[in-house]
Image (cartoon, rainbow, N blue to C red; front, side, top):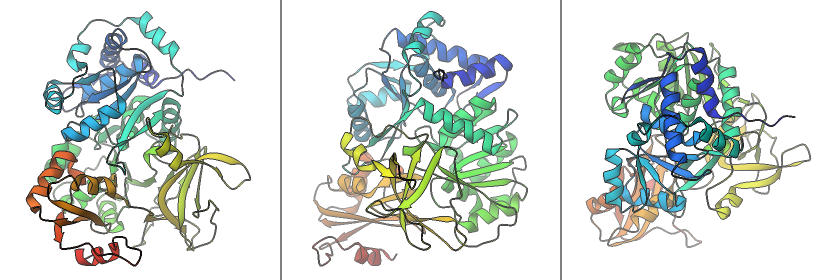
Length: 507
């Protein structure tokens, strides 16, 4: 069998050959045709190839935009791996990510340069515009870089929350992304004439589906500015005025609109598919969407970053009327999804909870620079046919019900899903413990209403604790409430009694 030499850059080049003047990306900054995107990406790739070695891990410290996308592809052209890092990251967490990577350089814009300098970064910084405007592509140099790369080289690293207070970088190979996208656009019928409304920030893996579905099919990627999600009428106007046809969104973003009675204001009638993930979709909110857009197709997607975006999907039938949970549905081709007990025994019985495990195609390479964390989550396991395969234990719980479907049942540890992000409570607690005059900390979370409550002992003022967290953590990790206690409640094992804390929080 011939070696697969495809790259994600082939997606945009193939579309460019078909329709060079077609809009590839309409960003908050500017619009690029496929011809312009290929040109800019190659220019960036050429400039990088002259400055850093192949197989380099390059953080892109920028917010979403056409220029950011050009940088991603430019890094691929240079034979490297891109690492999206939001400029909303507090300085301390930003430096933790950079210290994990130890990159040869960081790509950013004018705003990012100032933030990097304030954070104390002393390494090499490239201005994205300077890279783009540095000159024409050196096709021979780019060909050398492509020849030095392998299809299973890392395409990107996506950082998630870590239990020790240090973010974990999930290393995602090129072939996993391309296999997933090939299946994704085929199963869900994404077309060249679609306009994909990108909601997710580019350091959140939901955005991967937007970026590469549009590149492969020739659809137009329409990036929605984050501020629009704070003003629902403005967001609805954007969807309608920009003729958006596909929404691949996190559940909280969809619920913002359905929870505000916004469909009485305006309905985005051209939206033909809504695919959602990140956390369990409340059926009540989903039914509001279905009432407003009854002919639209709705798909429940499930899967953590570690298995490249998603591993299951449930296409909702038109007559779906249950008021309960949505099933996880079918398994994507080339993968196995099963539930197992703590000893690795596969569970088939109904109403018995087990941990969701995934094996097969599209697995990632574990966590950057952390064999210990990788070996905790990625194991050789019996997948049910007598053979052992490299398997990811997700930490998510599920069980089979009477209808034979598999249903998500929450987390088995202290990891939560909030605002579509996967968060380790220990990282928040670790950050709170750094505040002056804080002794003990514990956080509890109510998945029904999304409330996150922090308990602590000590004499620290609540405003001071919040101020410390704002300096250390992104907004989606900041608790809704802070409660000071004289002492932490303990169970008979001497551990913090989180059941009592849940009661104190009113959960």
